[in-house]
Image (cartoon, rainbow, N blue to C red; front, side):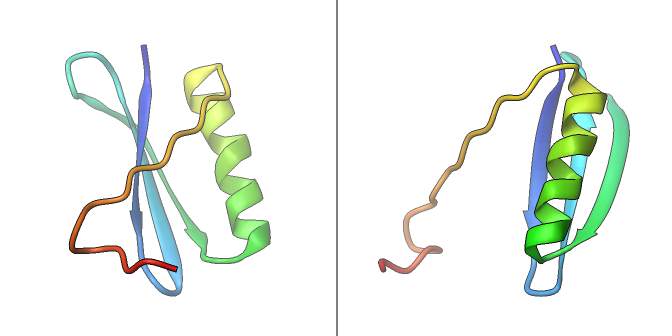
Length: 65
């Protein structure tokens, strides 16, 4: 299994694919735009062979609304 994590910022998003042991397999930096998001999804599909998407909100970090 491959898991892709994201480190998101205002201008760029960095995605990293890791294997079951947590070893880094690949990394991709995209612009924080609609086109960048599409590029990241295509990259993640190639890195993992699947398309799955999830989102996590951390209490105290994300503002409501």
